[in-house]
Amino acid sequence: MPTSNSHTSADGGHDSHNGSNENTALLPSFLRGEVEHEGESGRHGFHPRHFISVTYKSSNIVSQYVNLLWPFVPLAIIFRYALPNHPLLIFGFAYIAMIPSANLLGFAGQEFAKKMPKVAGTLIETTFGSLVEIILFVVLIVKHREPGEGEDEGNGDEGNLIPIIQAAILGSILTNLLLCLGLCFFVGGLRKTTQKFHSAISETGNGLLLVAAFGLLIPSAFYSALKGETTLEKGSLGFVIFKDRFTPDTLQRDILKISQVTSVVLIIAFGCYLLYNAKSQHSVFHEVIERDEHGDLDREEDQARMRYTGTETTVAILISLTLATLLLIYLVEQIEAVVHSGVPDQFLGLILLPLVEKAAEHLTAIDEAYDGVINVALFHCLGPSIQTALFNGPLVVIVGWILGKPMDLNFEIFMIVLVVLGILVVGNFLRDGESNWLEGALLVIVYVIIAIASWYYPNPDVATSNGLEGMVALAGPKHVTIDKTLLNELLRMVNSDA
Image 1 (cartoon, rainbow, N blue to C red):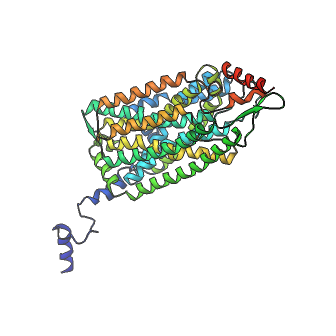
Image 2: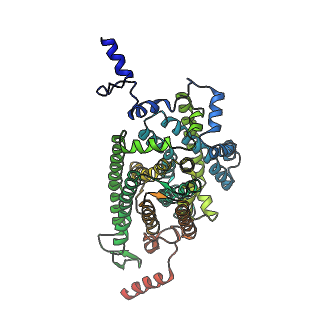
Image 3: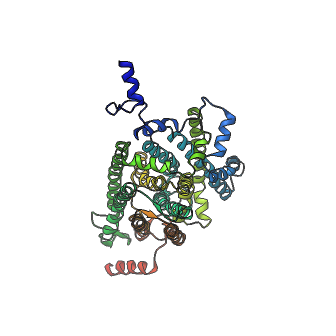
């Protein structure tokens, strides 16, 4: 009888040839079942009391403590308009206020990601964590001014935010690879002596970072190789000028074109990375992340936690994006005052800005490592670094291209070498497929050493390892700093031709 056969097939296990039976308790069932229900809240619409409660409790205890910083958000907005002549105060409050705002955006991204398949959800969560960085880069390039653009006094570098953007791009990569990953290894090693991670995530991530580092290095290497290829002669007015067709302006234009084309290629590489992950939805990446989440030491507590509805998730994303954009504008407005107060450009871009923009991502990754979900934590450390190198950084170059701003990838050699060495160090630690607290402590120590060096690294208007500005700007309308030995040599050349 058809009915009896159907019943037997469901309960008696004779449906092996019928893979579509919804009662089959095989591995694909959790791939299909828990993905949809894990992020469900059991509610609909928007409920203010539940929204505030879920927002405060957030995803972990550290995020709850971060939410105690929310009073800084209205204070930062008030000080911006009530105390406009206190830039350092505005910068300080806006900087602290960015932390809970970024944390809310990261948490909303997590809630949205939990309603998606595992790999797609992790990618979306990483993308939400990087939105603050994209906003920061765009605000910086929009606020950038070329020498002579709307400046009445001061040196020619006032309003020049490109060095800070370049430092922030590389600083974001270093912060994720050294500080965040180091803290993940350290915190996870305190709870478990050794944590093992899958080679599919570590090898793919490290390989992509090496490709990205190669792409970012090329414009700097090109500039360094050719900047000394021009020759000098005496001009009609006694100033040193360039006589060859390959002038500094020509070289700068070539670097800009190389950077723009390289940015397009890197974004294509990022598209390939996304496509690879999308195709891996039910393959090794998905299984690794799923296995990790089932081994989460706090899995029961996480599943019992209240969640946003779809509407509440959207509201949280909109609120956090609005606040983050507003606060980042306040930060960028005060950057010149902060630099004039004694904070070096390179330290500001390489250390301070990446720390605040990546706060939410770091908290998430560290909490996952502590819970034993090391593969997901690794994804959250390598993923943002890959996105910064292959998408966020190239994107700001293209935005500058559209706006007519000369944003390029001609980084300081000092900084690009730090990034390449950082990638190599991390790749060496990932090679054996396991981590411990000592490796984490070493990565953090390397980051601290870089932070110390960046504090003492001169600002671009004082010493530029990749530039010729101080050599040729003798006839400019602004005061410049030039080495005494170089000046004597230039005067000797002029006098010898007289």
